[in-house]
Length: 304
Image (cartoon, rainbow, N blue to C red):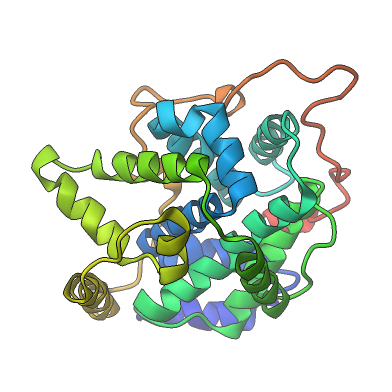
């Protein structure tokens, strides 16, 4: 295989019909490390919306059991990527996600915004730090993948294209980013979890590098002091240097999934998808976790 052979295959596929195949190639073969970092940043951005940060801070899950929340979120989302929407594992993962979300009073607008971050932030990350920029096919497929996930989660008024996802994200952040004590606690806890992946003496450096990747709107929302311009330049320059080095490597032949990431710390002996996440009692009179899309009718040819 040559370096751009996966991209050539993507260009031969239909991003509306073959979105799952394209998304898998992009996320697990072309950019597995970058995609993980970008999704971490995507989820992190949501804490700057006070209604989201306050809710997450109130549950205590991120501030007390941050590593478990990181592990469970990554594993549940990735099960759908690996196995498809209509597989048993994919349905189990979506069911668990729905069960947890439906316990809380989360607005449709907030749910849609979180979905937008998963579409837009990886694309923007790769435009800045990837070994190549994403193609139009990949952006289209990414938007279709998350629009499909959004339907399975019962999210209404989903954006219809990548440009719509991007516009929705930018407008929502402009209108809603702001200070909340709970959001700041969740932010601090998340940075602590990321620092814990490295030897203790490196923790301040890891935290500083993470802060250098935050834009001014996030820093302002969390009331963080802006990093020194030289720190920003060093960290972002290092990522761009890495991209140049990765461009010279042969293409990956075996997909790399989130369950293989060294940052997943909580399940050294394996895990059962149905046991991941939290298990509060279901609200009275509600069938918690039922996926709103009838299986076998939506996307079934795409799970191959």
